[in-house]
Length: 538
Image (tube, rainbow, N blue to C red; front, side):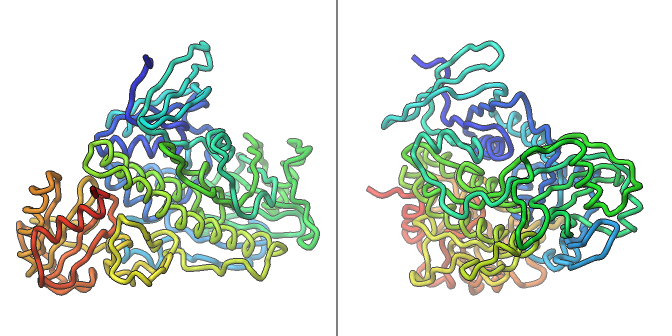
């Protein structure tokens, strides 16, 4: 008999593992996450949180907390630019303002927050929702069978072992995933192209900022290539170093033989001012890699985060992509475990997330090459797409979304152009509910949602009947009914339907099905769509 029985075992309790536990808890599913390290992140790695990640944090109730913590740490809406040194010549401006030109597509904003501040917030909320997190605990072995996974875990301090029996297991155990290796899943891509370092330091660099609002500062000079992030009040931060010397013949192993004295030299070369007193707090060694796992699922085991894809930090997409993995997987596991959906629904995790992750990996690599390592440029390198396409515009193609045009194989697009097409993230639009304002995105999160146009009464009634027929919860919202109004009159156009039409939105906020008009509205039609999307097939 196992010592512990739990629906989902999560191996890895960092950003992605904790997010998985949090999202499962949001859907009422207990999980156990085991983490080798003794606590949450100790390195203050500064992560850019995209609008999409902020949207899902909004769904689980911690968006405002994260925003407040971010504002304590970093200047908001800063620029992303390149310079020779912090004190020296400016070379290029990639994004003049972190949220410029994107505020219309989401109720949420991009921001920066260090991982050692973010992870405790995720941990606290996950525990509130019923997750169990065990730190200083490692998985020793596991076996899978037709009914689940049996794993042996060990407490690092006491050496005590326990047997865990779970229906499913999520491998969020990082880029060197032992679970992935045990399963024999290959990583495909560019491999390691730099043995990089991150130097965490203290020093009054406020005068070198010269009043500029800067979020990320890429450095490129004859000594090194890397980038800065500086925390308020501009007396601490980090310098990531990718390579050294001549860009035509660079030294890409920055990690080997590194000393504190050499770190000071590199830091001064990037600051461009030898008079600023600086002290090294810590140095992290890491490999710059751009790879995607060949598979994201093997039986009852799923890969998420760095276990499934690894990318350079350029663009800030890595952790966000892992959070989106967790968000996509959690509702599907929950619906299968609750027997709302058939187990085949879980096959859509890899079909949806692997193409999105592979695209993001290549976009991060292209940004790395363009901004930091032009010597890696090649003819087959993917062209740089709009950041919004990566953050909000990836398109899912699977049985969990019913396409209107089976020949449309677009992997991504600008979210302003998706217009509620199945497989895309449901568009944001502000609505009025009573005396307050909400986003359409605030209507999604736990159940399937039918959104009907102002004349879509037939679909609203049919959805309620279909939900009763199938024995599942479907939230029904009609514009103009029950206090929900659209003062701009833009809802139907935003979702690509007539006023008589409707869209069916999944718990993760992606459109599953759309009908442009009220013609043919019936409970049977909605029930058929839900049955297909949920893999409830005989």
